[in-house]
Image 1 (cartoon, one colour):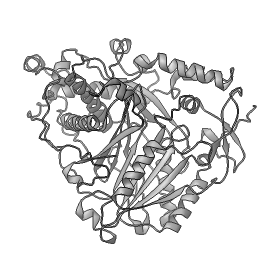
Image 2 (cartoon, rainbow, N blue to C red):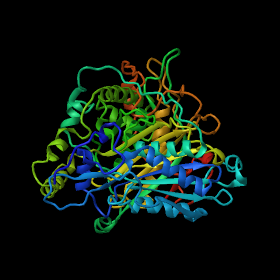
Image 3 (cartoon, helix red, strand yellow):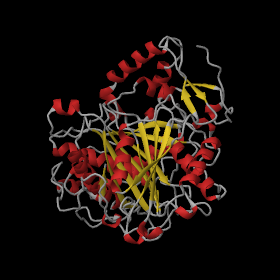
Image 4 (spheres, one colour):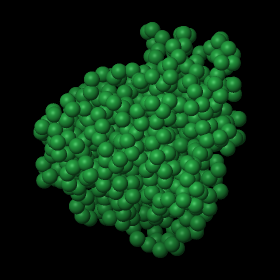
Length: 565
């Protein structure tokens, strides 16, 4: 099949309908590797304090889809001997993508489970759906009692958008919901500040932001839970846990910017979590490699839709091997954590400044339209299986501070934004974060072929402790923080909605924004601290609040409780 190429996928206006767009390399690789056991879905939740008018919401969402015509696509049918896949621009939805899922706590649990298990089909335009869940007495939208009473006497609404990741990513889905809010409330779009990129003419060292030793070594895998291997092999789908936490502190010397970003802290926390999890299960320590999406697109109404992020890998091995014991002990040494954060900040700064293809040269070679798509699919799946031992340990994706007001008029402004990314094997684990109203909304999602729900809850507890530990890291040239066993994070500003009025002044924590990284000398007291380090994988406190494993359970966010799906 010959496909007339258009510029719609490159950020230029798309034709109103009928045009064809060849699959980009990212879309094609994803299409080749689809599996019914692990759906390639992106789930995005926006929590509102009030209720929405169904007819107005359906109309506003339809207008938002028309405002972003690249979203209105479906896969062109064809046989395996064709030379390429293609998207067909439909110009209008094939059906009604809005579903009012009902009321009560069970409705939200069912909608989340559906988001993880049931991908919107690629053959229907748009490849996304919007589930609307209403609260009764504040039960469907977990949050502080003060928030629950702001509008409608405890009423609330959750907008749960599910998109097929072969067609769209989380920033695109969030942009569609932002346009929906503007159409629903009648508020014009406000200018969105652009991302900051440091100038770096040369590529990052090794192209992966890591040392040569870390890049030549296979990354560690997340250790599976204690279930028998045959039971894990038969498990299907994903599990998910959500946590509402304060944004971690970022210490800095007086008169200077913090030496690392919140995104760097998330990466370090994920590496510590995997290291301590594996050590507690008798696995030897090793280099952790993290896949990190970087989004270079503008975030305004002109944002190109689709899969627009590029994936980079960050090697999280400490530069000094002696720091391993300090990091994986019962109490991570603050000075060692600070050194890991400084190294991570330097690596991510280089990677963000380096331009490249989304999935590297290998994906480009596999998607050259010289062979039929059927043969290319076999080669791609074979290459994926062969490269499985070298696949990164975990995916960490961070939207940072949500730049949109998400003001739905009488429904109120968003009080929380959660999202999750696919967690397919062999990686099997993803961490997703977004910040709204001074709170950090974190979602851990795992493949049930790797972890059961109880093990996923334990891993989420370790991540919370690790994030607390990285918040205690001292800035360069300062005294180490007083030792404490994973204390609570610093108090956050009072909860409130995201501010849509004008540019945000707080530094963006996303992988797309860069704060300056400050490199300092290693702490002179490090050798003595290493001598006092505890053995890796020491027990972590079990008296800390643990995730509630009841589906749809609701807890006050100020208690830092996690909510599973």
